[in-house]
Image 1 (cartoon, one colour):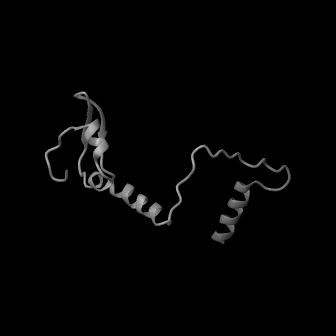
Image 2: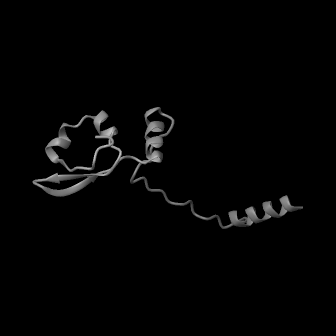
Image 3: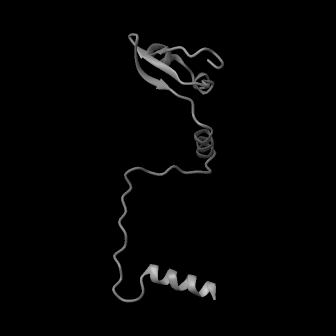
Length: 94
C-alpha cells in the first residue's frame, strides 16, 4: 500500500492483510464497513516504532495498567523530604 493514493480498506480486506503488509502502510487509511467509514488505520510514529522495537528486544518492559499504589504515611518525627532536600541544596552551594 506504500506510495499509493489513499483509498479506503474494507473490514473484509483488513482481516486479510498480513503484518508485513500493515507495516508498509505509510499514510492514514480509512476503514469502511458497508461503505461507511468506521475507523482509520494509521502508521506508527518513529517514536512508537522505536518503543515497539525496544519491547520486542526485551530492552523495555511496558507498564501495567491498573497498578495502584499509595504513598507511605508521613512520619511525625524528623524533617520532611522537602526539608532534607532544601538542606542538601544549601550545603551544595557552600
